[in-house]
Amino acid sequence: MYGSRIRHHRYAALLAIMLVVLAALLSGCSGQRTHDHVLDVAFQSEISNLDHTYTTKRAYIILSQLTDDYLFLVDPKTLDYKPLLAKSYHFENDTTLDVKLRHDVHFHDGSKMTARDVVYTYRFVMDPANGARAQQHIGQWLKSVEQTGPYSVRFHLKYAYPLALRDMAITVPIRKAGSYTVDGKLDKSALATHENGLGVTSQ
Image (tube, rainbow, N blue to C red):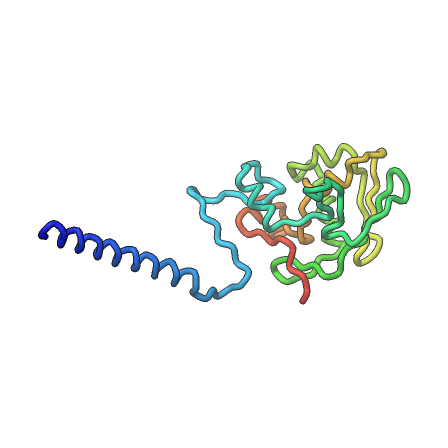
């Protein structure tokens, strides 16, 4: 009888603890957030660089893919190359690629993405002095890039390269024009922990 009372009190105490934990979990789930489209990510150590243009750490590269966008994407099911930030594209010839951009894409700071940002990004990556990770790869086949309109860009290839769209879909996230210039000087760490990615579209 005495033993059964002890067991009863133990079960009651355990049940009370479980209810407290459950209530805490539910309150955390039902609590209203101050920002709707926010993803909180925890790391075991301090984040040093989330900028895909420069970071080499795999975890940071994977996380950067949640904030960065590219002109094209690779369909995971068909492996076809499809426009993402681009609206459409057309090969004028084997070494000339014309790209029309979407008009509804914004950076996370609210500014609108235009051809100026795309040209800035690719010219920045192509310049060896900037030390971008993709420079050696992109620079092998891309000769130059020019703006042909507010939302249109032309890429000039050094030679016919069938994997151009693939490379553009995985190696060069688009940056806002001037992102790496601070006080008139190159700053490779400008976006290390203050990303200004893409993906916010007009309502």
